[in-house]
Image (cartoon, rainbow, N blue to C red; front, side, top):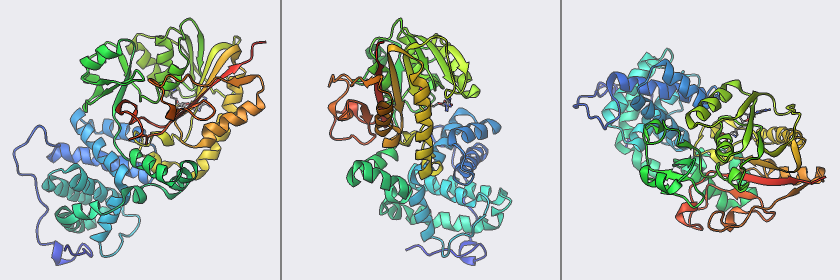
Length: 468
Ligand SMILES: C[S@@+](CC[C@H](N)C(=O)[O-])C[C@H]1O[C@@H](n2cnc3c(N)ncnc32)[C@H](O)[C@@H]1O
């Protein structure tokens, strides 16, 4: 059995120098040496920003990768390391603890993130141990605070690489990684067994789903993917999406199969006026525009709207774009369709955004539900008589979904719910709530045929304004 390691001065682990990369470079192996160090530095710095500074992963990762000018392959490797840690932090921490006689002191710079990133490489990504260990030691020695612990890191990681796999396999990663408040919430809402299934699914890697402008079957075979019953295509590609056939021609865009459902519920939108109130980065705006609607796309973030504009340009689609706060957005004319894809806790998308586990707090649910209620009130005033208000969130919390809409309907007697159409080949019964809204969960595994599994969690309700 491995022995615990005590501190960085013990002769026990100071005898051997850190292992170095000696093998011939292999193009399919992760980057090593200088490039490998850069990639690992980006992973560690993004992890520090998320776990310690509580900043969103996508933003900090993009900035760190750009600052280091990472090549696409190194960038993908850095992302893999960081997201593997975020999905397994609880169990990686628990394994690391077994090799340390006492807990590491607090405020040790990036030391904990260096250890976690190396443990993820050794136990889950299966990077060659010499590269993972020696580069972690280099990172530690280059760190202003962590530099005293180079020997400790070397010794811990050597032992972990020898015997850590068995220890990791014996742990319950869901219980160790998921925040207690969220598990307790989901147990109350969905029952303990379903909550566990949701959490387990949320810690898995998501697939690459895309929405095509037309001809899903043909694109599925061109992209070597599968056409899902809902019309999305699921691809097995693991590289850069920009390299896939049809990307540069604007034939499709990346969108989770669940995120594509709300707009599909509307049916034919051609010739309708549509207001997309929280539009960026534009997946649903693109669906509406591709369906022939005249779209006004509003978002309060100018930066995110710039991405929406780029996306539409690539797709050869158009929309009128407006930077505005939807809480006070007004228009001289009302719209046939108003879509409110409201800001939410996004607890249905943890597979794609594992940083949510560390950034969201229990009090965010009520705060966001209050914002959604304000946005809904504003949106209601922008719908034409006889028009449709489509509300959706990628949250699993009823306050942001079913309860939000129940409260809205009790205050807005001029709206009635339009239950979603039940074509079981496209929307299975399991996705329909008792009231007729859409509710997908990431956990529906065995109950549904293959093509309906592996979606994000989403909620959507269609509300029709009375004709006056
Ligand atoms: C869930 S995302 C929308 C995703 C988008 N509908 C799509 O399909 O690509 C929520 C968006 O709401 C925007 N947002 C948040 N608060 C807002 C507000 N008060 N007014 C307008 N936009 C807001 C955010 O900037 C973010 O882009």
